[in-house]
Amino acid sequence: MAIRSRYRFGRMTELPTDSLFSVNPSRPGAAFSTSISNTVMETSPTRWTKEQKHITIAAYLGWTLDAFDFFLTVFVLKDIAKQFGVPISSVTDAIMLTLIMRPVGALIFGRLADRFGRRPMLMINIVLFSLFELLSGFSPNLTVFLILRALFGVAMGGEWGVGAALTMESVPPRSRGLVSGVLQAGYPTGFLLASIVYGLLFDTIGWRGMFFVGVLPALLVLYIRRNVPESPAWQTLKNRTERPGLAKTLGTNLKLSIYAIVLMACFNTFSHGSQDLYPTFLQVQRHFSTHTVSLITIVMNIGAIIGGLGCGLLSEKIGRRYAIAIFALIALPLLPLWVFSTTPVMLALGAFLMQIAVQGAWGVIPVHLNEISPDIIRATFPGLMYQLGNLLASRNGVFQAQIAEAHGNDYATILAWVIGIVSVAIAVLILFSPERRGIDMTQSARQAADSTNA
Image (cartoon, rainbow, N blue to C red; front, top):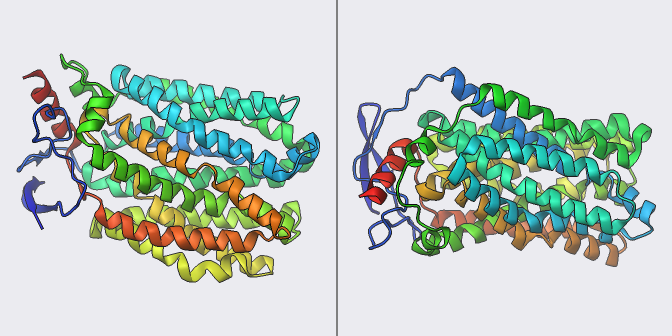
């Protein structure tokens, strides 16, 4: 195992690099790639500034409200299908199209954020996904609804990568593991909020009203405009004279890029495969009421939040890779309790524990993808890899629904098979990943800018 030394807060530590997929800036023409020198002095303070707190709050709320708007759909699949006279599997195409279009948003807004800054692109993303959510509620037929959900996917795809880059480049390095868990906890928090809105308001406002509520996240832009500064790493890179193209940068790191896409395809199957059709499973196979489905989903997402925070913090102690592998494998013994239980209490317990595992593993992803990203495209690379993985996994919801419908609405079996297989795949794949825990992103960006301008 190769070891690179670096300094952290006045003491020498070791940075493991035992991976088949390392970021290699040593080849000709690769000076703009991620550069981790043999010695890197981390100068970021351990105490948080007011600006760092605002950035973290804004990114967390951005992803929370993005997920809130996305998950409002999964509670009303059955009702939209009834309204438009189609099977549920046809409406799940909306989820598929949202996931398919997210890489487009990650590419467009990631490149714009690398060029013009993280902060303005984050605000534009939030306005756009809120607008398309509102318009979805006016859909006169399934075709228009599907088009609007595809456009929503473009806006949703840009938010995660831009918000994560802004945060990870700004917070103290030793806090990144916890902050990564906080950011990813925004996803189940959004699901939790959608569960509450569904339980309290659906019987009154119907499925269209659910989408009208989804315009409220646009108000977050006012907070960002007033309180959130630009990333210091982007400020370091913005004046570089040469801007290498995306294709050239990805080509220099081709193995890493392919690996990240495959890894994220597994991760997105892990999350969407355990979440998107779970309310439908409770409604259709277990025949639970709106209130019961809402309560179980709330409990499930409390577990997800706990998992994301816990695993993110653990990753600072044992490393990103081992924390992910452990939590992914925890899902296996939970499968019977999660979907083959029959009472609301036992299903709620199973869902709670399952999402500790799923979102625990996910809680490390924001920091891990940002740490292994080439500096010059950090707003693009994590989001694009994430969303291209989403693209590969986008058919999963439709696949699960079709298999369930073909077997008498047996959602439990297909849910268990998908999660069992993908949890093992993640635990194996993550061990081949680079481990870049604790790198100084501002210093690394400065080195990349100096190399590019040289």
